[in-house]
Length: 119
Image (tube, rainbow, N blue to C red):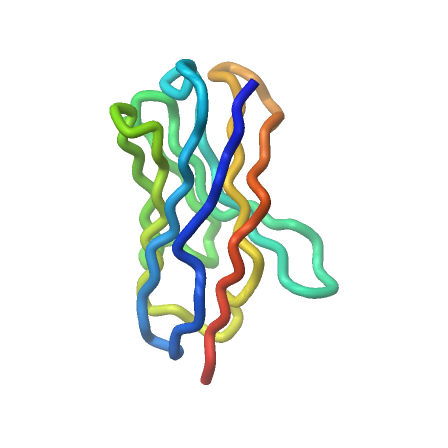
């Protein structure tokens, strides 16, 4: 069982930056790939970024590539999402998720962190 708690959301002006953090409980954090997803009002939850268990491989959605960076610190059981050059359309609830390495689906989800971007 993995429990995830996001933090770092808030209000930022377009063009600004925010860093989200996700703290995972348990001793098996380093056995899990970690991902970030987001959901805007009235829209489906979308993939944002994923990082593998070691941190050596990452992947991003086209909409955030070059602006967002996912990273992890296995010693701190934490995954981060650095968001730069934020756009109004990046506003959403951001969710941290975990999947056991090798699995296709994310089985563990955080409660979400609100990111609001003003124009």
